[in-house]
Image 1: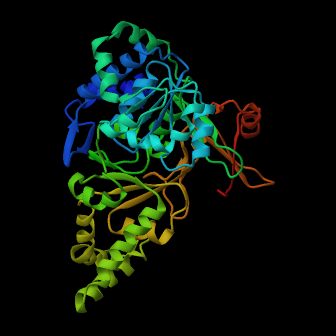
Image 2: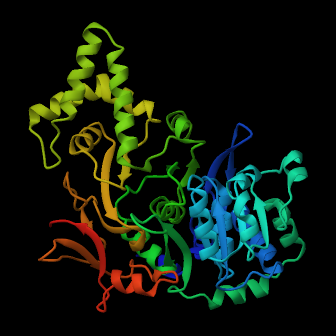
Image 3: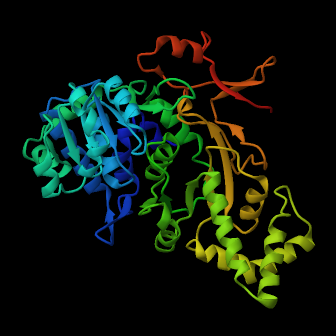
Amino acid sequence: MNNTSQQLTRLFDLPAYRKATRPEVPVFIAKYNGQWRKIFVDEYIESINAVSYGLMNKGLKRGDTVALISGDRPEWNILDLAVQQVGAILVPIYATISENDYRYILKDCNARYIFLETAELVRKIKNILPELDKVEGLYSFNEIKPEVREAWTASQPLDTLEVLMSEGREHPEPQRLEELKAQIQPRDCATMIYTSGTTGFPKGVMLCHENILTCMHGVEKTPKHYFTRSMSFLPLCHVYERMMNYFYQYMGYETWYAENIAKVVDNLKDARPYIMTAVPRVIEKMYDGIYRKGEALKGIKRKIFFWSLNLGMQYDLDGNSWLFELKRKIADKLVYKQIRDGFGGCLEMFVSGGSAIQPRLARFFTCIGMDIYEGYGLTETAPVIAVSTRDGRKLGTVGLPLPGVEVRILEDTKEIVCRGSNVMLGYYNQPELTAAAIDKDGWFHTGDTGVF
């Protein structure tokens, strides 16, 4: 960690760090009305502060909670840091959960405000709004259609993020905001993420700034020094994608937001990223797409294509013979380069998590020049416990523990336990569950089994 990065003690310090280090590079690039739009750090900071002022004027205070139901977009990040820097806590919620889960989460976290990507999303929680007596208002990232406004009958007001920002710009309180920020410590709760347990209701995982920054700094040496662009398409509701998103901001990358999962491959051609996160199922689908393209070929082209694919499955991460490398060079000119071009031409690194990836796929993508780095962790560990790095990567494993994170395998049960500054503060309002998960010596019990 360099001297400048030591100034990063809270997540909302990231925009100022970015302004000091890479102000000329867009922070985000996202599509609005069919056109890619660049958002630079000055606009990012101004928007964050405008939302903070608006929330302060509404009376939002330290320890209050704000719920967010939205797909990935720059406004997600703006709201996230705006809430954090006044000392409040963001509770991101998936748009796909059941009404009962919405009821439980929104009541349990005592959300004062709910932000939605579109006002139409209100239908997901319409039936439970009368039960949410703590909610003081709802805000949509998008414009609200007249028919939605006309049909609005809930007691809580519904407006847009733009209106809240305008109110904040009209009533700025920069000195008070700086005073609030100065009071926030690295071990203060920054976000609460509800995990779906196998039994019972979701649990609110309380993560502090230090938890997520530990993981962010733990992976900073793995990307190559010339990387400048990333793509984001996994849900920011999940701490895995969210931590990597902070990481991209910290590293000075452009972060392109895919329009949706169906358009990822098309968007890759515009973004030409060097790095992106994925889950094994997505990587499997990418390989299936490559395979189908080969099946459409005829004659000698088809034979060369599948010879190249089969060669990739034989790649050895620990080293290959000179004959294999010669064949690989031929396959690269004839097939692999065209595959890479289909992903934008620059993609050199997938970070894979969420479940185990098939070693054959990791072998294949690494052989063609799109390395797969596998990691392991949980929401409760913000989320990284171990990750493959350029210094330690072995197929079929999740790599080495993060610097400063201790990992043990219990002798009797083979359970993985870990201890370090990545471990959550605890489960919200659940002291018994917290005590069961984190023992008196600070070891977090993952419930997973493993071997070294």
